[in-house]
Length: 182
Image 1 (cartoon, one colour):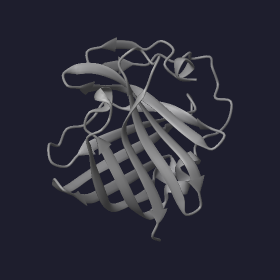
Image 2 (cartoon, one colour):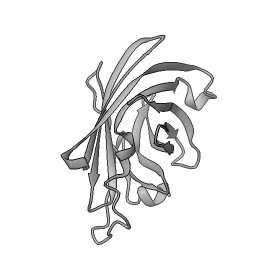
Image 3 (cartoon, one colour):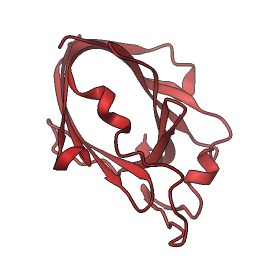
Image 4 (tube, helix red, strand yellow):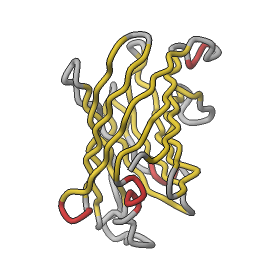
């Protein structure tokens, strides 16, 4: 599936430009795919410090994620706060639905650095969301895949995977288990 989503991707450094076939119409309306995320959630997250070296070194954090729709649900704003052994972490994510492409983009902003990550782009199918893009890991551009799965009314899972071989293999870089608070 990722090859279909990344059709036409040109990786230059840490940037990915996605060219979409203008005549292609989305097979379904995905504008409500993130409706499940509305509200306040407890998040238990694990960041893998060495994803390409076995994943034995991790940092675990617990916190809160709040998500609310904007623009009549065509976009979502998510705010995250968590605490772990390295202190307090905050971030925000903007999700925007492109109705012509039938795809979502996800852009993460780190509160400490103010850096805005390159967006990931993708869609949901059969209750599972997958968004793809590129990121920089230890100075090297790698593919990144964000996955929402196990979506239930009061829980879901979010994971980030990296690939340095063009998507042939993927390693876990981050995983979060979320349970609804309200």
